[in-house]
Image (cartoon, rainbow, N blue to C red; front, side):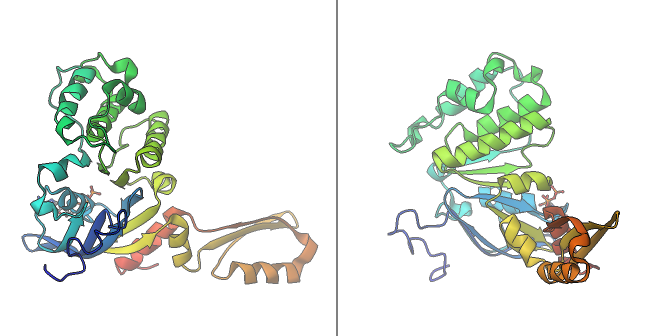
Length: 309
Ligand SMILES: Nc1ncnc2c1ncn2[C@@H]1O[C@H](COP(=O)(O)OP(=O)(O)OP(=O)(O)O)[C@@H](O)[C@H]1O
């Protein structure tokens, strides 16, 4: 890997300039089956990246490779400046990983478990980032204060997921991976979780990479959305940037003579101009709506899969 664009130390002299995640031409096959066929992206400090893609696209595989839990077939990866396959204990302490629900330790009480796990991070404490997160503060942050003395086996699904998040952040990670974090959350828990994500990035400048199938959630949380399809990143940008990337999707609605009309146009401005030229004052209730993330997502995935638009 010597001489590559990812060579360690290439930008190390400029504090803060080094990307938190750098992925170049990442490839992964399971046996004969190629799941990742050349994935490229970067993440910078404090960004929230949302990885979207159809079932089986390779989102979990990608995240597991970045976490150092899975060996890649090819390509170059740096996470916090380190190849995850070489990641030592100190590197691991700087990462937070929220796995699917924490099933063991069901007899432990919430506070005990967090206190216990947090203990492992004390030796990695720094002036900038005192570790671990004080348990009471952490309980407050994830909304589990009232369940502090509850045995894990007795938590509801949503509370358990909050505990998963608490476990992921107890070491005050610089980079946090969340794989479908809000599955099973009720709307209130979901909103609180979104607030928590914003707090983590605002207060601690934590970089967050998460997967979800909830496009509304993606739109609310993401600084950048990555769409993975057919083994590649087929779109990379904010929700607005992605919708601009997809042409012909602006929806125009209006009423005229008591009737409702809907039309999709690539050149919405031109269409509206023509509409007024023809019908002028007869036009009412005009709405021009850029395509939703769902429409954009569907279109980009279908294009990647070579299907009909
Ligand atoms: N350990 C494994 N051995 C063989 N194939 C695997 C393994 N793990 C995943 N796969 C396959 O790789 C592909 C990608 O799986 P992955 O779980 O990464 O996708 P995903 O995008 O996270 O999917 P979902 O949205 O359904 O969670 C799937 O076809 C899956 O069956």
